Image (cartoon, rainbow, N blue to C red; front, side):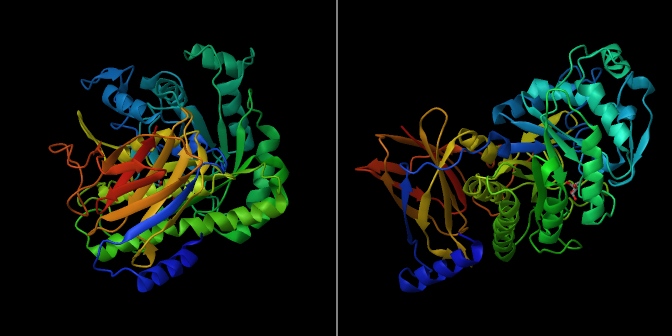
Length: 510
Ligand code: AHR
């Protein structure tokens, strides 16, 4: 249900029954007998850009580092990412993709040029992490690859040659150069993004111009082994852009990409702090998070007009919270703390993605390490898992699961439903239910009637905290961490759960 309609229903429920001061009941029905679309694992994808310490220091320390590493990649980060079963990694940007010259990132590291990262603080990039390092890293993580080629300052020839270098099994000069640089077998590009935010940092293009550029690029790029070819959308949703891209280029694409960031204030000059915020910013953060759903539906409605069979995918290339940077952090490095609020934002987004899984088939949270809504924060040899990491880990069984309708009637929290939820049949055959209680003060009793479910037991995990900005630090890494959930019961085809305030709960019915 679109957010605004849902909000109206919440208000009615509230005035008809429960008092705002009491812990009100949430009721619902889970229809396991009405399976919906499969939740593409790639909806749990990660975005990593050459930006600040997102890669340098956060992922890559080099083989000579004192920080324990595997051929230059941090061991602690690799281990943590394996816990998430990362399905796909996107690189090199972001805005950086449209200033990236792939030739600066191949060959002996000591002779790679130093370039300036004009988008992100003019940092000197030593290009130690380049094409080989990205594809090798993806192999170590066990993830698919999502490569963005440069349209803003690049040429179709450069993109064509890069893709040949990466994917060609032939004896072409470019494939031989790859072999000389240490990689015999070609790699697979699973997703190939043409440009990034072309209306803004990707070249200030108009939709018509980008559509023509897109057509030109895909006419020359031939990834061996195939790839999902993605046409980039603007830096916010713009239905006219989507329509123009569909009109002029739909037959050349496999997917269309949109981006959406949650800013608590909605103001790019003053986004709101990552910690030390009050309850009004807590609520505003979720109001702005839910705004993604009507945007997705708007994109889908336009795509449905041009592609009623639903062959072309919608991809959310970038999503997540964007706060004021950590005070004292270098300009343009987009460093921010990550709290229990971020974990709930992630879980709300997962539910939205599942509800729209028919056409929404990949997404990338921005960004994986040390940048924006990160999974992991590092400082020299130290590393900490964020609350968002834990949300991704808890929702892992939803990757590749079959979505199931879960209808919930919830009391309101502000203009939103206090409790949101999602359900699916996992690839292991178990039924999974994810629940989020946005109310930071009150727990909620949830009662769900199960249709078409044969299960006799329920186990689960809960992520919650005392304070609305509770977070993990290098000195206190487990302030926010999942714990076994004892508050769920399964009796006579009814699932009951007592959700703590500000919590994420994932249940498995067996
Ligand atoms: O994730 C940070 C930036 O946000 C990306 O580089 C860009 O695509 C978006 O505007």
